[in-house]
Image (cartoon, rainbow, N blue to C red):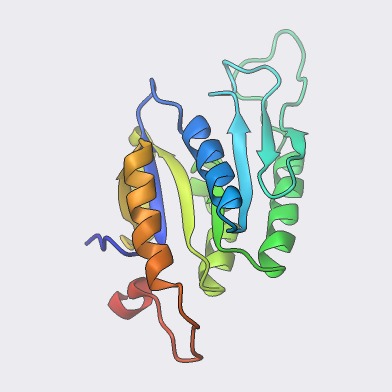
Length: 188
């Protein structure tokens, strides 16, 4: 069951779509409007396409390399998990300092296995901070299992993302009392 006002949103993209550009522009727009978005967005589309795979920490503008050089004969993704976890630690610290939104660049193999940046989703939601994450269409079933079905599925376009944010931010605009529960928590 999907709830249109759930604090957790999956920006589901096809192989020919670029969720990174949408998320970067969205974070910039939020910052210009006075919101504090924290998280990271990938620069480049895939490990294979970007031998210098990197992310930008949207709350600081810092770029971090996530690519490790495995040599000329190496095949497959060259993700440096240590660098990924370092970036995640910086996002976790930013969450602890307060945020209006957390953006997680991808739901990938690491996150599917409960590793990588998956803990940031729980950390943010535990602090009542909405989360948006880019999810490739071919991993959406894995995402549903990970999120226990409690997620909004967004098309990979600006209009869908902004409509979700408008509903979530309007609902969260007032002071949150101690007994506040998100829609996702109520439906669990």
